Image 1 (cartoon, helix red, strand yellow):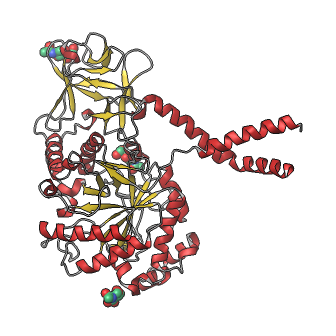
Image 2 (cartoon, rainbow, N blue to C red):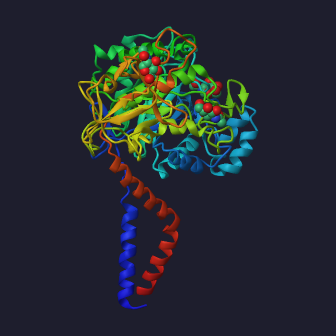
Image 3 (tube, rainbow, N blue to C red):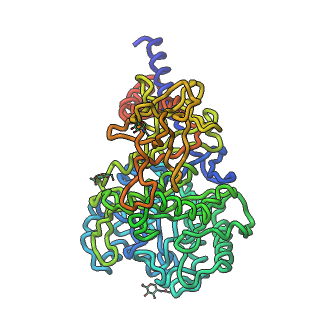
Length: 568
Ligand SMILES: *[C@@H]1O[C@H](CO)[C@@H](O)[C@H](O)[C@H]1NC(C)=O
Ligand SMILES: *[C@@H]1O[C@H](CO)[C@@H](O)[C@H](O)[C@H]1NC(C)=O
Ligand SMILES: *[C@@H]1O[C@H](CO)[C@@H](O)[C@H](O)[C@H]1NC(C)=O
């Protein structure tokens, strides 16, 4: 091989090697900038997390008997999550006789023999490690895969959580000694000081119970926050509200007094069952309006008050058979999109070693299936994927602020079709910028085209004459999620989606008090965004380079090595 050819090949390889390293990476630690969580460079980091439980009786991260932890971590990344909310029971770290149990002993003591064999096969390195070492090993595995971790103190006594009067719900309860809690938080924060992928600690899950009160909340949450910050000043501190993390309304009138800044985040939980069965027994528009209102008043307001808000638990029966859950989720996803919140879905867990006395408990809220390998229902992931990347925030503005039209029941957005002036649903990252004008037209920015219900009353289309009533879109119903306009003859219609994901208009669903109908297909949210369609195309190209890297990097390395060997 001639010198010139060698030089050329080397040069080419060098470029490829450089490309491999230009990955957009988050530079840690994180801090807050007003309502946003940002990295070292001040660029928004949207936490798109999944909950991974390690707080039940065995005190071992669930699933380790089914699959190697690195494989689980890789799958978390491949499903689009960048973070895990990793739960732990206080006594794991405050009671040495528990923390020093080996994984094997912990299962033996509970009479669970199957998980022992499973862990021996799938994660042999932790079977005789202590519970704390096993916990650290999972955090390291997540770190190797660039997954950020929130350490969540879920409860004191290991087990399934949470009951109103389970003695583990508020400061001063039999199992919730505030001093012991501070000791445990301090130990945990110290243990993970210097572990860069641990980006946050949530101090206590779902405060609740007969003892809960605002004064003690301030007293102990401030103490806990200071203790954690002292032990580990790099991490974000996440505080839960009262009433099962449904109520932070008191922050409106009384702020926390902390000695440090730019680290405080609040968390919120919201499920379908938060309101019992009310999504089934009531009209969904009414429920969505009412519960969104409540949530805005009790925690959603925080983003306008300059605090990041993490929805650290939400979820549904992923089989899609729970009507209460399904109705709630459409409403919930609308709010999360509109506010562009950070979140953690409940749960990664396909099955538990032991939950509420049942060994091998199948978790229907779990993204993974019982076997921890298959995805339980990919349509759920499709629906949340648009929310895994930020719509806006510091350092991200690629285009001017505009709207995208989000459709929660599919997780897609309204896009212009390549042919004609019809519209269909597609990935939100492909959306062209829309403008919602003061005269209530929805215009494609820079294109002189606006969304119209056409004369026939069946399709929605783009038109150039935007002054008529069929171009004027108002949000109607108590949910404010219907987009409605009037046909030429005065008939009111609502934007809808047909079974082929074409955008159509139909008569508006469930505007009355009917509880039996589901308006989900007609629910949309106008979401502020600075994402551009072009940006996505760039990122796709980038992804394909990264994929190539995975396939070819080993070969590449061998070639580079052989060339270097030859020269040296
Ligand atoms: C530690 O845990 C063990 C086992 O549950 C229990 O018997 C013991 O009383 C606990 N010790 C303390 C100090 O709480
Ligand atoms: C997945 O979820 C969708 C939507 O809820 C549902 O229609 C479908 O039956 C589910 N599939 C499985 C395999 O659970
Ligand atoms: C208005 O037009 C639509 C679509 O052509 C039709 O279905 C509807 O019945 C008309 N309404 C009235 C009041 O004429």
